[in-house]
Structures are given as C-alpha cells and as structure tokens.
Image 1: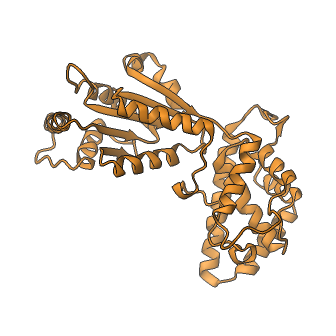
Image 2: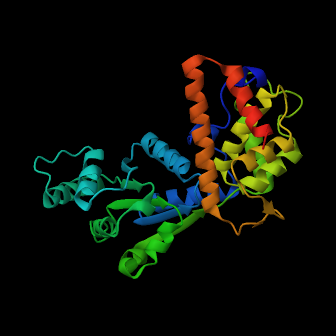
Image 3: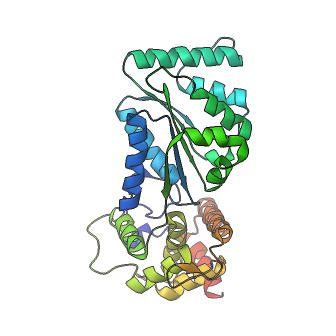
Length: 327
C-alpha cells in the first residue's frame, strides 16, 4: 500500500514471524543458546516460554532452519490439539516413518527402532512442539513417557516445548510433577526494552528500504516512546501499531509518523499506556494486548481484501485515516 510512498521494497512490519527480520537481543541470544545447548548435549527436555507476541514461533523457525542445515532429524508439531494416538502418529509421520497398522504399540515400536538407529550412527533426533500450552494432560503424559526411550547413557529423543506462560503453570500442576522433574532447561523470552524497541523498529525499516535509508527517520524518538508505552515491548504489538501508523501517515500524505498518530491508533484499538516505562496502568492486562493485536490484524486483512477487490488504494487508506482521526 504505502511502500512506494516511503521508498520501501517490502512491508517492514508484517505480523507473520519472518526469520529475515530476526532481531537478536542479548536475552534472545542467551535463550537460543540454551535451547541449542539442550539439544546438542542431549539433555532430554527443554521448556521455552514467553508472553503472546514475544517471538517464540520465530525462534522455533530459526531453530528448525538450523537443524535442517545440520541435517538433524526433527519432527515439528505446530498444532498440538491432537489426541494422544494422533499425536504419536503425527510425530512418526513427520520423521518419515510409515507404519502399516498405526496402532499405538506399532507406532511406539517404530519410533524406538528409528531412534536407536539414529543413536547408533551418533545422530540425535529432535521433537519441537510449538503452542505447547495447548497440549492436553494426556498428551503431555505421553510426551513424558517418550523420554523413557533411552539408552543407559543418553536420551534418544530431545524434546522442545515452546508455549505461553500457561505452560509453566500447567507443568507446575500436581498431575504433571513427574514431567516437571525431567525438564533439564527452562528459559523465557522477555519483552523488549525502550532502547531495544527503537533498535527493533530501525532494523526492520533498514531491511525494508528499496535503496539507502533517507537522512531523516520515519519514526522519531518521541514516536518510538509512544509506541513503547502502548506495545509494552511486545514485538508483535509493535509491528501491529507501526503497520497501522504507516497506513495512517500515508493516508494523510505525511512522510513521518507523529506521536499523535500513535495515540490515535492506540485509542482506536483500546491499547492501554505503560506508566514510567514499566508499570502498566492496567496492571499488565495482557488480555487487552492480545485483543488489540487481533483487532489490528483483522483490520489490515479487511483492508487488503478491499484493495484486491476494487483497487482503491488511496481511497481505502483515506477512509482508514479519517476513521483514526475521528477518534
């Protein structure tokens, strides 16, 4: 929509987790190193948690890309809402195993034979489960039992559970105390600081410009501070705010995004500011953040559909800008 106006070759603030825009902070590098250490040292269980939008799926995708380059066998469960048997079947299928009669016993036997074969070659196998907070207790117990697939010296299967903080609370439950005891490494992704938010926005813009970045900046320090107050350092929410702010600036014919534009975007989507860059005026109500991010995404998707239908780029954006200005 606005790429030509701002001199961009691609949208810098897409909500999809694109490894092209990876922004490594000291904390995220530490987390990634911990996860990879758990795999390379065959620790068995690694748990990665983080709030909605902090970059867990992006980190998982980077991990899978690394495993693929190193030719390490892995299964990636991206939709964990499966029964215990369907879960085992999916893992076996993703590892390339074909079980003619996929009963639970046959699938487990095939998995064990495969993992033993890998171990004899000095190779490891990784099971990565994204959105793991949605796993049922039955499936989590099945995953625990998979760690029984081992030799006297090492675990045959390295398991990464990535999910929201609800996963930590689930693992703390009495029913899963045995699984909790087997977790070797636990790490957590955290929101960005103000300075990291500024660098994050600048990096995504720099990677998106068609040519050399202009002398000025689209987002001034004051504008970034306004973004930080409402996004709470959550990368996905930062993307959503910046995307809509660029749309509004383009509709208004402005080459820069002003702080009052951020205020209007935030008000329109009911985002609550952070006071003193740390304490939310709404007691860190992350539920509101999730609702706002979803609302932003829905609006952008509806705008994209409208553009594809009638090609009314400028008129559609003008309507959007007018709606923001009226709030």
